[in-house]
Image (cartoon, rainbow, N blue to C red; front, side):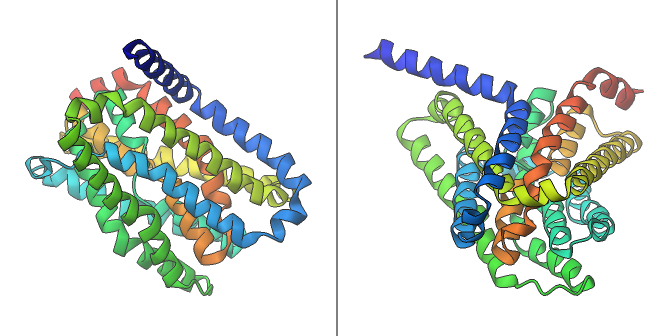
Length: 337
């Protein structure tokens, strides 16, 4: 029996590693597959908008819940002393990133797509963000503090930021669906995830939570995200086919935003003498966004047609994050010089 468990564990671990390694390719494949399927079943999709919206919410929950089990909130007070880094992260997440999105969104034409683009840039860190920090050799403790703080502060600030932009472009965006979706895909997974973590820590121990089931949780997050991307693009297939330049424009714009934020954060970390480890935590948590939350909010408030940006950004976001991680030696030298 123990051999069977070991084999099953090994299989899950290998599958999680392969999925993580090729996540960008799989995201692109999911996107390319969804376009013809969405085109072929266009009429069925149009007539089932409520079903699509509910499916997006469920998949967003399934994407986020496993990462909330992995989120270590024990002993966070010990890591709250780095006030400078915390303030910088909050400025990047809730001031700089939204400001760039506010400037770019009107150029996308359709104001509903613009609101979706803003939503994609005001949400907190993605479930992969702490993983990026780990790969880069950054401070996991600081990354966890920043992830939790942006998560908690995002609950009141995200609806305010979206409301500010929508009023500036004369679009009526109901706040109740946004708040409800935040509760469903952010607050609820956080509470249930931490409750599950607490129970598992008490019954199984820390090694089980942080090592044994980690591949299972990571795999569940990645597979749910791939299915979510498929559903989002499936619903946007006709828009992408009819307006391919719009889809390309969103990817290009988001690439510019991510690169700009990474460059600015690197220069500021250099000026303020922030260590490489703390800088990587600051950069990855501040720059990478949870598009599952953005998709759920946009869909709940304005319908699935507004979720084009959250559907496309996962194609480019991990590529740029990994490219930045590959510049580790240069960044270390730059911050130390």
